[in-house]
Length: 461
Image (tube, rainbow, N blue to C red):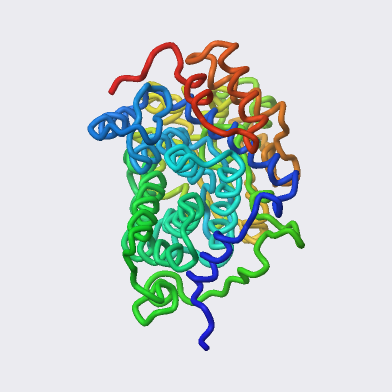
């Protein structure tokens, strides 16, 4: 008998993991990531891509799944798409850097949409979220996609298909077919994160999750997909990543407690995670510079990944929010000017700010092999400023708040949530949301959550 395919082994993991096998610290971590995602959702209310997704969902009204900030109910895939864009829009949700970067919380809104549509309890929602994190992050550790021109959301195809299969109560064979369909049918190009970045940068992950739900729905009705999707002659290994191995049998389980979600990172700034330490370095230097007009030059030393991805030509002249929040020189300039990075840092007025343009024109970026060696374990950056007096100032930050060394705690997540929530829902509604999530694994339905998140009036359709 031949060994089972990788897709089958992933399907088996998804079908067999139980809430009883998930330790209390992992469940607590899920609750924190859930609150973090809700904070991002609230901060995205009213954004153009969100409004477009809501308009699309409004064309297909069904009593299955809710869209945050509205009284709209639609199909689970369209709810996952709209809510997923809200989570991702600000680039403020959690992340993880293995051989491939990614944002595992991109699957949370899709899991929630399916849990609501399928009428499953909070314990199954938590289990599905753990499954999605486990599979996506292990894939991120296994192989790079961006170096070969593919987008990291291709790993969401697999992770969310497996989580969807679990929430739909598919058997192993059906779950394997869901993975086969999702991975083979919906490959995304890295161009979404290269050059001048568009609205789709914040939508690509939500689209992958939407497609995974559709793939699982097809598998539920008996549709089969290309196999073996990883190992085949024209499969994922040969066409996309190159061959890699995954020890699925030793993914997080009752015996080892080694769940990947515990290694995910969270953000204190609404911007690309790999440049957070450059922002912290710039803030340290700002405190030492009495007059920013005396800055003669800025030099940023960083990893190979950051130099290649966050300092390409378009990042020196950002024209969109999506380009600006992935620009190493822009964020360092903005941090020096404002003493913080906030949602307003990426307003059209701030992006066009001539003071930022001047500072970027005085900035250079280079790779430091020593910092590359630290990557991806540490997302380190070094910022040096030379003043017109000849004085040179340098700050190197290896890791900052939200890292494994200094993780955010419950109070940090509550502050982030309330800061994003304040313009949209009152204090009592905020309290209801936080109380709901505190018992997430014990919930039996999701009505109270969506009601508390509705805000001061439904978002436009």
